[in-house]
Every structure is written in C-alpha cells, then in structure tokens.
Image (tube, rainbow, N blue to C red; front, top):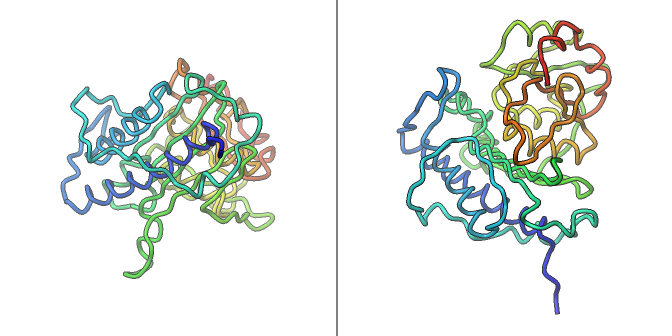
Length: 308
C-alpha cells in the first residue's frame, strides 16, 4: 500500500496547480480589456480585477483542500459567494515525485501559515510591464519561510507567436528549486535591482553607498528575486518600509533554498507567524551570493531611519 505524501508536498503540489490557474485568470482579465482598477492608499498602491479574482481563487482553493491552514492574502476582500469556476482542485503530480525533507515531514495544517500575493507588481501590470508581474504563494512554519511557488504569468511573452508564455517556479529548503535555471552575475560585477515605482531618498542613498556598476529599476519583489537567481542582478535593495510579508515569503523560501539570503536592511531574518505585523518596516536586502559585501555597505543613516 502506498503511503500518502507528506502535507508539505501535497500543499506544494496543490499550490503549483493553483498558481497555474492564477496565470490563466490574469490572462483572461487582461485580454478582457477592463482591469477595473481601484486605488487603495494612493496612485502607487493599486488593485485590479485580476488581484481580486486571483486572491479568491488561491485562498478558496487552498482552504477547501486544507481547511486548517492559516492563509493571509494581500487584498482585503468582502465575503461573497464562492464562484466555483475559481476553484482549482488539481495538483501537480511532478511535485509529488519528490520526497519531503525529513525535518518538514510531520507538520500539521494548524502549524502552517500561507502568505499570498495574488498579483505582485500591480502597478506595472496596469502600465503594460507584464514581465514584472508574479503570483506568490509562500509557505511558512515556525515563523520561517520554508517553501514557495512563484508564477510569472507573462514570462517569454515577447518571444513571438509560438513561444510558451508563463512559467511556475517552486521549491523549498533542503528540497531544491525547480522551473528556473540558476545563473550568477559575472564575477566582479555589482548590479542592484530596486523599486521602479516606490523609490525615495533612503533607497537612493543606500544604493549610492554600494559602489555599483548598474541599477535596474523594476516592479515586484518576486520579479527582483528571480533576477537574482537568473544572474541579471547581484543584489535586491529596498531601503524603505513598503514591502509586506506576502511579498517576501515565497521569494525568500526560493532564494534560501538556493543558499541565497533575504533579510531586512539590518540583516535580521523575517518572521512569518500568523500574528506578525504585515509590513517589513526595515526594508529588504537580498542576494544569491556575496551578501556580506552589500550588508556591510548599508549606511548607518539608513539603518537608523528604518526601525525593525
């Protein structure tokens, strides 16, 4: 008799299928032509129909299959009747071929917190920078990001009519990362990726202190971490309190599974307990390699301005 896969692997397998469903929903909303944009706190903090539908899809699909999980999504949505078309009940069989790391094999649903950003890079989505957009499903236990799924719904979208558009990356600590090829920035090159739409003096002061060769300004925390993994940037620096736990949980788990590092600007680890404050008030610093080079160059004035 075959044994049932560990909870973490079943959760990852379901999250993979749910993230692929999210990609389909996002494509449908964009092709429909009406994004139905709402300003939340201002012009740089937007919500679209895609954000709303994808969050419903992810959270309802997970809750139906794993009723005792704690699921925290970015969007504050009113209760409404479930649209069955949004529910994804499938799972990725390929994920289930992998064995769960021993230290994560006995988790119960009640111990897990799932952090969901249904559409990371919403402002860029509304402005047509489609490759900046990601869907983020982060899995945490004991306050630590341990696994995650990142869907990039418009990956390869400019590669021509026959190109396969979109990809889903998944992985976890002591498990590995799948769906993406790892590449490092050329030796000696210091390329920083940072916010495209949320820059300020602190961000710029911090980057200026890094002695970098190039600065890339793009949207989405998920997108920036993918840039680190693919060797397009050597550090992700955001010296500002704008980022939230749903922005960093999945990317952190994926990056840490590759021996990278993602912390606040002081080098402190993030906590992902269900009761933790949502905002990452002391910014974000992340690298695939060479973390200490960047951490040692964060100005004291920036550290003093950003309180954990």
